[in-house]
Amino acid sequence: DAGVIQSPRHEVTEMGQEVTLRCKPISGHNSLFWYRQTMMRGLELLIYFNNNVPIDDSGMPEDRFSAKMPNASFSTLKIQPSEPRDSAVYFCASRYDAGNSPLHFGNGTRLTVT
Amino acid sequence: GQNIDQPTEMTATEGAIVQINCTYQTSGFNGLFWYQQHAGEAPTFLSYNVLDGLEEKGRFSSFLSRSKGYSYLLLKELQMKDSASYLCAAPTYGQNFVFGPGTRLSVLP
Image (cartoon, one colour):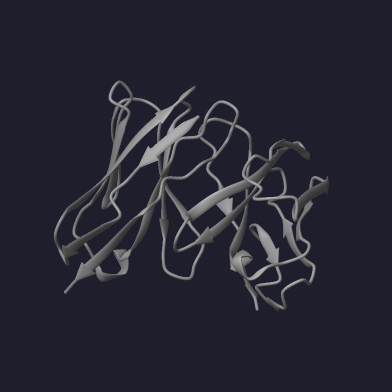
């Protein structure tokens, strides 16, 4: 099993540019989660999907952030326009929707907005 | 809603035992998870508790008391490689997988 695959691993962009982060969950997992991690705020849940449907996006910081899951094997998190305060590590994670099923994390995307 | 609390930092000596606590308040308890995260890496799954009591897995054990909203992770025979952050999470029935702030453990020689 390849695990959760995220791309790119690193992204450096200028303020105002659009950023798209990509995630391929583990095959068979039906829940997908996007997190943001910073030293100040820890690991924050941004949005999660169940069976490709967004269930809770209350963690999305503002309208500049959007996420989609067009099918069971692909999700994107988009920031438009990006700002320096968006600099963080963004993790995607997936799990099978059952009580004791753990979350499996991708390696993350380190985003730097200058 | 959910409220999860953990100590921010802990320090221990190689070979010792350390206990990392986690308190939670959640509507609709569905088990408690512990994760380990080394600096610059992704979190990895350590343990899961849904019933009261101690679950042992090698050098790591995890305890749960549902009536007290309390869990701890016990690390025995500490090694330098155990220096990491340890995060607990108590997802609700809605599967909202929210993590606590994490405890950064430093193991000293």
